[in-house]
Image 1 (spheres, rainbow, N blue to C red):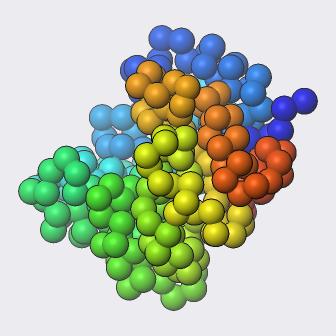
Image 2: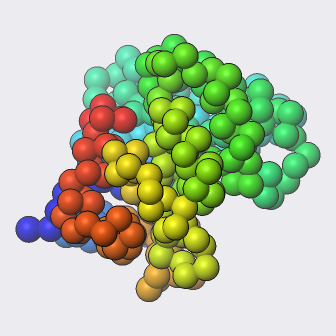
Length: 263
């Protein structure tokens, strides 16, 4: 029997994977992936998130929020739609979101709306506190600013994860010191990423694993479409980095995900 795994961040509801979604979910099951968490993007995809969670109840678990790359001048409209979904989901048996997200800051693609991104991020943190949900953070080229905002709101009851963490050892220590987890994805398998060295001294209790499918495929699938079953390669590299067995890495990261997302 393969170890039980939880993919804490996967966009399998997107059109890139929809044609063979049943096969993708089955391959994940075959590799021991028992839970696949679905981060939201914006109003164009919220219905896809909810529909996929309904199609695979108990296995695919929805989040709800607004991705920073979808934050523009009219970001308040996007926030209002996402909040309406959260309220409706909380009132529907079996459909409560497991997190607010993904949200955060992205300075890689476009810096035009940084002010709006920060306002939208802070508002979604308030939702996380209001509804007692973790917040799932996108922090591409913006890790320090995201941590600054978390630090401003952290009074002991805010929890969450920096998804697809790819920062430095110092940033890793700061984030875990704030009580937040690090989401480790396929980037750890890239030879020049340096991620293995950045996290090697971080206690295992602060790590969860993810795919970010269909993006950021691990070696040996780098450059190809990602999917949840490929998480086993990330798991193996994490185990090697921490100098522990694959089974221990699986048990720890899955337990961490259960605690964080209360699943």
